[in-house]
Image (cartoon, rainbow, N blue to C red; front, side):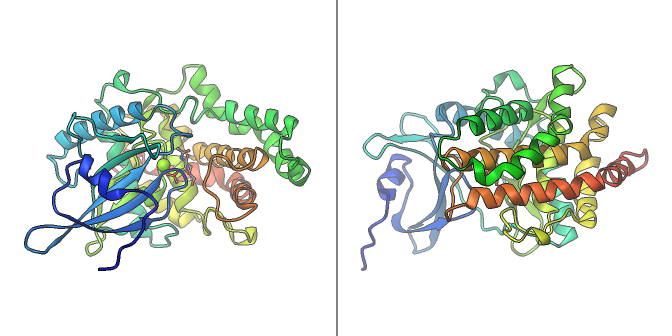
Length: 369
Ligand code: GN1
Ligand code: MG
């Protein structure tokens, strides 16, 4: 048998989670920009294969990973009960009852969960899939309606505080620690020019006009797993940032990613725009799941949320570029700048479509829909 040297001692990690069977192999799963994810395959008695999902948490981003895992424990338990265990995420425990394992020697924070045979979508033009992704995220939030938010830790402080994100960007631009600011003056100027508009939700929240709910906070469509055959949603994953938040941010982030005519990091900005048909499909899935609990201010800010979160992410990518690419995984030099430019192009297009987008959302809130 060929012996493969892996970057980490997966076999040891599996033992700590008491996974049964013989360790066979590891496949890297790409996609996320923060954590490292692997499919680890075991052979069970009788020769059949069983996979698990191993994740190494990025402790630079999640400073208190134990708190992330405690949140996940609460949320998965709640959803498990609501859904009778069907397609539920299940995290394995170590002998001392923890749903994580810290490998001191390799300085790694690991978690292991059940693996789903599934497909995910990065760029997706299929309106039926977008509609179903809307249902998946809308139902996720609806499942958490009666969840006690005081149980949750704030895993990343001010995660979607657009105001603070922009202030940090401008402060870092002043400091210019990597000498890159001269390359991004146009991008900074654009973000400055829309600052007020992009911070509307933060302002309304501070003024007590928008309620905090338990939200997912990272609703990229590739965080919905679909059945490879039926193409029905199985489950929503990536619960690291489930925290009290705004419904418009969940809606907005999903649309930002899913209804973009190009990839999140498309270098050719002429390919980037907000596809209204795709927007409509997602909204048609998402909005009706929640319309009976949303306040009129919440409904009226859903489209605005798409703009706010897009500018917020542009500012985060740009800030990471200015400060030396410490936060998001990058695949090449300048990747974060490409991402920031792509988000700015998208924000500009969204600005021209906001009224129409809001009209579409309102349609799905009409009685009888
Ligand atoms: C990060 O790791 P991933 O891909 O799930 C980020 C999100 C961004 C996203 C952009 C904890 O999510 O906020 O929207 O990249 N997550 C964190 O692709 O910062
Ligand atoms: Mg994430």
